[in-house]
Length: 206
Image 1: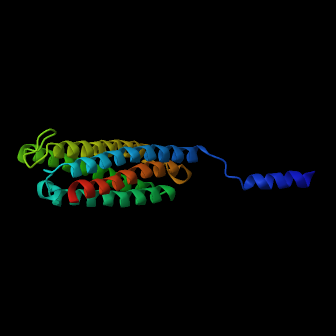
Image 2: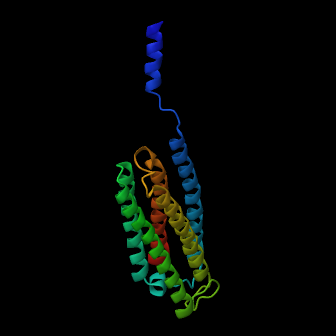
């Protein structure tokens, strides 16, 4: 009888039950899967509209790639700082957590400031609007502002999300075993960065 109990206990030790932490990751992955379909639909719609129009301007000639290229580089750098921030939290390095997650937040804010500047330049300087485009099809402006604006909303949400994480973990509350919360936030931030690379490629370059 004792051997059976011991065998049962040993079997349970090898099980991997669903924990609150794994539920959190699963929930984030489900959310990101749905969000990926949203962005995919927008980009697919953009492609269909673009190739159906004969007066579509060359994006790089109207939008330029210098500023948007720097914005892309900036977001990639924030992905790196996000990784370092998670590693710091996992190792109980509270100072490192504050520094790297703080830099990630600052990078996100800078991205939004640059996007606001870019929009202002396009609207006031180039005359490009939501329903007007002096360079060709008016849908060029519509698709640009919808897609980049939708992504900008995600960056804004990500910055606020990370700010809450930073405030909660600045005193070490999210270190070690509690770093799972930071990891889940990192999944969202990396997704936002990856989506921007696709937006930059389709909207600015191609």
